[in-house]
Length: 122
Image (tube, rainbow, N blue to C red):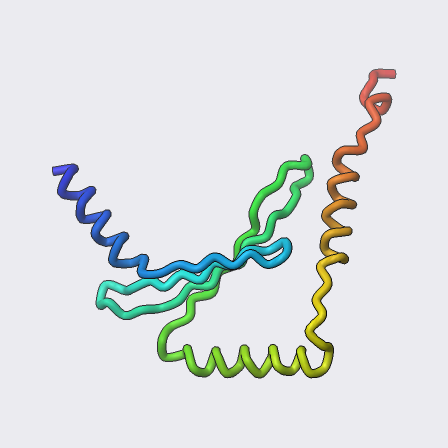
């Protein structure tokens, strides 16, 4: 019985996950995943993943996800193209990740700059 359930779950997962594309861009990673509904309608999920540092100096991944359905593809693509063209026209194509990198280094230094004298009992 478990074998049948596992097969059904595997078949369902294979049906749901159609195509994936990973794009690494600076400190962020974008995942473009084409999936299918039970009625075999395709939709797109766009996930942004950023590495963040917590208060204890440990890192975690912060994720944001957008679901984009086929009836919205054209309008979304037009809006994205218009916004990107505007930026390229008005600000040029130069991109700087330096500010974000400086912030991450600053945070790492803050968490690793521990003075053990502060921890002693007085």
